[in-house]
Length: 235
Image (cartoon, rainbow, N blue to C red; front, top):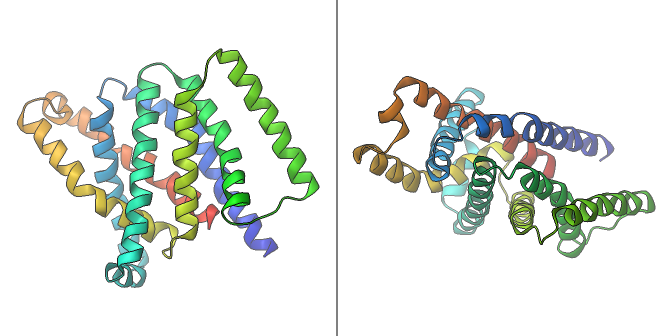
């Protein structure tokens, strides 16, 4: 149990470091692309990347079982909806110059995780953990007061991702297989929107060619890698 806890913490740390240091730079670089179009490409290219990883690592068994289980598909669909809401909110925040409030959302997120663990999963905190949560909460309150208003954007990011983490923790599939099924469920809608934009001459690929395509392909690893780490840490 102790070893698993350390491995889980390492996965979670890698995910949050990536989201803090790499993801904002990518979405600032891609800020000229409309948020909804980036979201659609994130889904498609994440599916491609995770599908390749599953193929080379030969992890098919869980996928085959999940296709015949209605409850598992509904759980993964709920996870896909919440993570999509989180993605589109974050992309819009960065592209509209609200990186500080977006960052506040991910400061609040661990507190939401703790609350969900306490209320839903009946987990309990020891004294050191309660002190840590209190310090983190004080920091969040200080940042919120500096904003001078209710941070609705930050709260949306924190709650949608907290609920996503809870669903992924209780889902019967491992992190990579679960992410693959989530993107499978969303890909028909994403592809339909991409084709609609490209046919109408409004798509980034048709407008910019290879540079735009390369930028959008990168959204796959930028999205999938930290999510795999995060889901592994949550489990």
